[in-house]
Amino acid sequence: MTLIDSVTGEVTHASKEYVVVNVGGIGMRIFAPRTVMEMAQVGRMVTIYTNLIVREDSLSLYGFASEEERALFDTLTSVTGVGPKMGMSILSTLSVDQLRAAVMRDESAVLTRVPGVGKKTAEKIVFELKGKMGDKVLAGLTIVDDTDSDVLAALTALGYSIVEAQSAIQSIPRDAAHDVETRVLLALQYFS
Image (cartoon, rainbow, N blue to C red; front, side):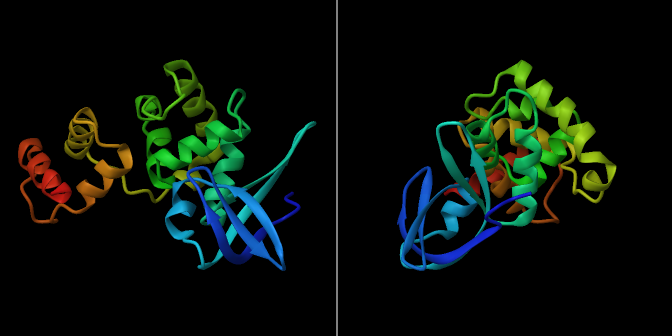
């Protein structure tokens, strides 16, 4: 159960890690992933779905672009060894669908691309999430085929983030050739 379910107000400050939202004259500092940072421009009204985490020495408010993203954060942080900071890092690097696809396909290597997540932690996350997410949550995902997985690997090897690479792959025309070389070249055009 969450104490503060959502926050709606004007963004008064935005940094790399958090935004400040003015709610009734009170500035609420909300730590958030990339999805929130992209929509939280100073002066803009936003609604952020939140999760208040109470620790012995602090109260921290974490915010998300959707209820689904918040639920995934809750599931992630229920994995032993995954705290709020790592959960934020994962959700800033991978989209909800990318994370679910990695879990469904047992691709822990996708998680090792997240800063601070090693091989053992990635394997543990995939193993525990698979059990906690269940088949209902994993059903209906658009799974990236093997060719696009190779394109994704090539783009990340060239230094692009997973999010950038995924966006580039989505920009490839549907009727494009289905070989890796052609698709990598088309994906690279996205960056120019």
